[in-house]
Length: 390
Image (cartoon, rainbow, N blue to C red; front, side, top):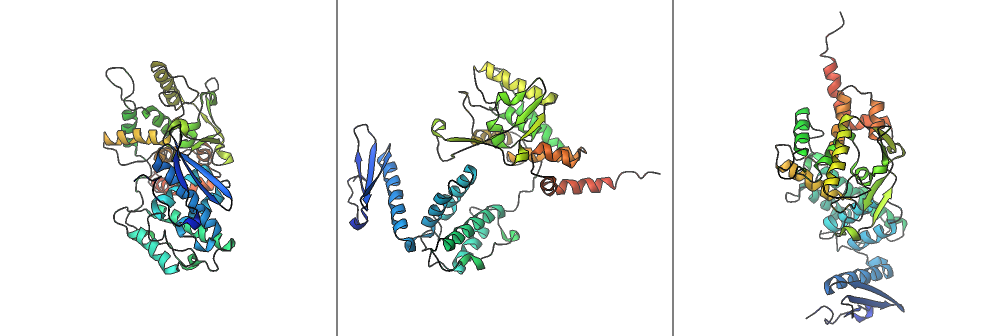
């Protein structure tokens, strides 16, 4: 039986109805307190899913004492939507859908949940042998849940905050240990550069679609959002400068690129707005990007674009990265490691930390020092191996 023809139970809640429109789309509607809300979908299943979300929202807004943990997380996120960054919103939404929705917490009542139940939830994340959550991931989830209950207290939905006596598991107990690789070694850098520059024998084009872009990120240390937002008019070839003045974010849940709502915003901090000098290697990379676009008849405003000249997405760059790793003996590295490698190599070559901080776009030198303390420690040890002045 189709969803539309199924009898919706609990009429006091006005469970709504679904019908097929003449244009082929499905329309769902629900009426409550003389207000009718509509939703649409290409398929009946999609429409029903959206309608259930509207009904759930109506229920929880009417009866806050009946909030489940999952529902209240969505309610909290919705109220925070316009006061947090898009990237933060996407990350929290992903946490709700992947770590909370199907957990033992999801259907627990907000007003009834106990501290020991929450503690067991976080402990279970630490010892999960299937998903193997890292300490960093568990810390993000913990911080989010703590924020949810703090909000519930301030909003008058609960009288006691159970998170006050819930503790974050120690890192040593987590099944997934911290990634050991912080930056590439000089030998790995050579292998990575060589892989990025491999060309097809038949058409003289690069084997990896975004390999040359990854190489640009390695040589400039720019963040992935800054790379995606970088336009050709940000590059001053005459004065040999790349101006970093914006970052790109988008709704990661929308699969079709043309339907994604992108957000161009200022970079992470005020000091992230910076100028990066163009050296000979960066000039070569930029020239190669231009040459590749011309060979492929790509006309675009973006330095990093797809085959149609539209902006690219992080997932496309990650796909090229994974292919490079698969075809080399490089460790399982991630894109942000290219930025760490850039900063680490500058420090190892003796560049002053204040200069490194400016090139990286850090808010202050303390951030640079704390991020690269292990690199500085290595250099301190090497300094003691230098011959003493006689």
